[in-house]
Length: 406
Image 1 (cartoon, rainbow, N blue to C red):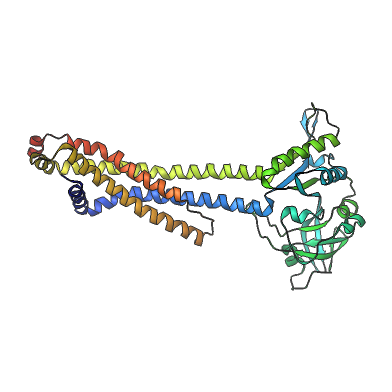
Image 2 (tube, one colour):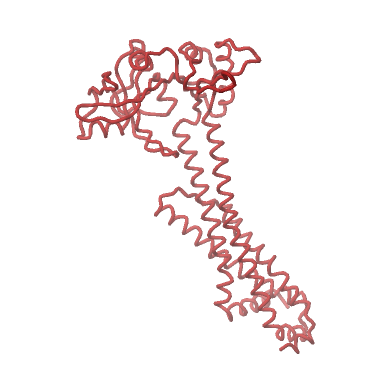
């Protein structure tokens, strides 16, 4: 008996029990749909996080004071004063793997402009901070090195600050805003960047010369941090090693001494977040894949029922010359047809549901081609694996006993 005839017989058997075949497919359909949708949501979230990190500056390196041990208790990094302007100048002039360096100090308080006020913070940074954070001035200009040297009371603000302090559409350029009673003249407005992947408003920002914030607001000589940018993402590790070497030399640390600073890179953050999203995606996909196993058990159950119902038919076919391998192939084809058809429907529903989630919920989704191929391959394997035993049982029936079966 050739393959074409076996295929036609299997197709006829499925069409004679359409509802039963559809209900059998349902487990496969739900499983495939769930797997594709979960992976699409997980991969979409991963790409969204990578994009947000890239917008923040994929080469960015953050240096903060390290908490030292006192009486067996590690102190907060905020209380440490291990970074200063000498460290900043050393990194700016001596490094070979950094393209930009900026000191960082900040103070929280109330911003006031006329009758409007808004709680926020002001960051004291250098002129290269925009390059490090990939920020752009939309109107006006950035403060200059001269402003840093003279501790000028000027600032550059984000769109959120503009909307809250100048809600009537007034041009903020040239206006005076007060921060903790200290007046600052607005000389620039940053281009809007919106919220990042961690829900932080990137437009709620006020930038001023670091010298101004240190002298006029904080009255301190130490830095709360230093931001830097590597020449390229691939050179981040080299830049990190170079920074550590320079800072340890400046701080006169011995080889046995621990670092009194900490260095973190966006690459490290990206790797950590990617690992987390991959783990969650795998977990969700594994839970969804249980539906495929349930669907496979359903196929085995229905194939057992089919073998029992068609015992006499099997006996007649074998009595007129059908071999056991033909009977085996016939029932395997039925099982594979059910699983593949269910898989195709599941793929279409999974892709469709992913786009619905994106349109309705606004979640980022990305359908991986490999997830579609994998789901389809699993469907085929499921059909063969769970259909093989009932098919083998049918092929091993004794023709005479099968014909006598009632």
